[in-house]
Length: 103
Length: 85
Image 1 (cartoon, chains in turn cyan, purple):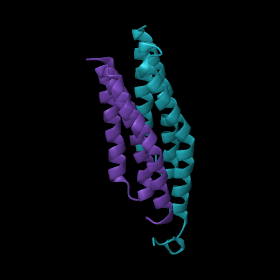
Image 2 (image 1 turned 180 degrees about the vertical axis):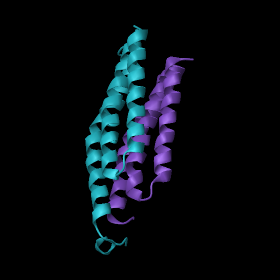
Image 3 (image 1 turned 90 degrees about the vertical axis):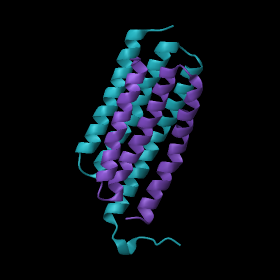
Image 4 (image 1 turned 180 degrees about the horizontal axis):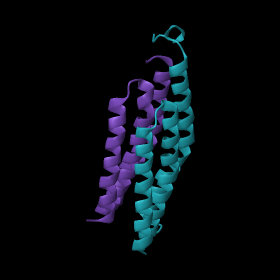
């Protein structure tokens, strides 16, 4: 069950999304703006890569494992984006005097 | 060249962009998103490498990295938020 053309298109699309996300993150200024690119890459690319693996080999061992990897990445993406945004906000807004000192 | 091997090389090139952002970052908060992005890209690169080599067992490494990058991101964010500058 191999479909070379859809596999190539999906792999190319995922690499393109990763490249655009990386370049956007490098070009944009501000840490909070960079989190948007991280979210986009971590949500879109696993879906494309999983679809490519499923196109190539069907629901094989590799397909199931890739689905699991995509589920993990997609599930953790919004949580990590929220936590990163909160940390960046606190890091950039709080003065040094209000920061906790490590024990 | 294998399609997956080419994709793997391109993904590793994108990781270098993230590394450049991390090295150029003035503050620690500038580097955090690039670090997280590099983790996601490396997981995908491992998936592509496993497909290129036709070894599904290599996907266990990608799965472990995907699972472990979550607490790593939470810990980094926690430390940046509370203590580091």
